[in-house]
Amino acid sequence: MKIAVTGKGGVGKTTFAATLARLYAEEGRPVLAADVDPDANLGLALGFSEEELEKIVPITKMRKLIEERTGANEDNTFYRINPKVSDIPDTYGKVCNGVKLLVLGTVDTAGSGCVCPEHVMLKRIINNLVLHREDVVILDMEAGLEHLGRGTTSGMDQFVVVIEPGARSIQTYANVKRLATELGVKQVRVVANKVRDEKDEEFIRARIPAEDLLGFVHYSTEVIDADRSGASPYDFSKSAVEEIRKIKEIIDRTAEQP
Image (cartoon, rainbow, N blue to C red; front, side):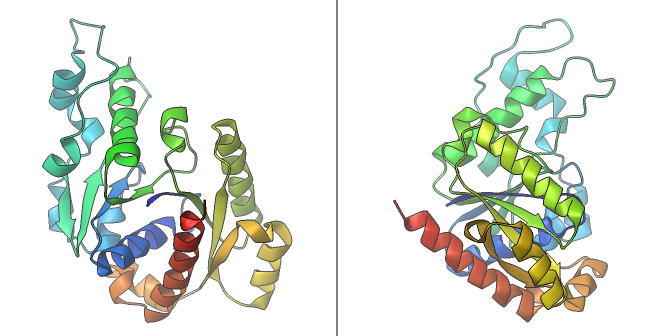
């Protein structure tokens, strides 16, 4: 199972991605959760402590590793486009609550000159995670699919856009679906989060095709409490976990279909 989770900032996609990862781990399956969001906080949502996460350096910030693998440095503008990355998840991944976390980070283009080697490493790692790992892989992405290329999208089982009841969230879903279509992705599904009442549900159903809507996760003060405590929502909110469990069952069923 390979799942990419995306959505605009603040909609709760990291909460969804982390809870989904822990549900798969609960089944005893090997799970790798990769944080590709510039505002990286997947680790906290999985249950890592702040002290543990402070010691983790995102792969895209590991200058020496990137130079070693790509051959690029200040004196050499040529670099390998297929660097070895297969060992990176096991070497740099950290485990908590049965989930292996790999913090990939993102590439900051502002004032950094040539960022090609970093992009190459990022895409190669994602390619390896999607096409060559036996784990359940969950990618916590930023709002877009720029890190993914045609060589990796074909291996994805699900693209899930987390939205909230609001016009801007709906627009994000439309943009992601457009990008996905350009990359040859046939299925982009939606999870509506922070849903308060029937009016919110009606708002979502009126704008998202029924075949794309995986389900609703209702507004929960317990999830907010978990975030305030820097803890995993999986350990705080039984209602949110059960709603995401039902969504997971739908994801599993659709992935099994030919």
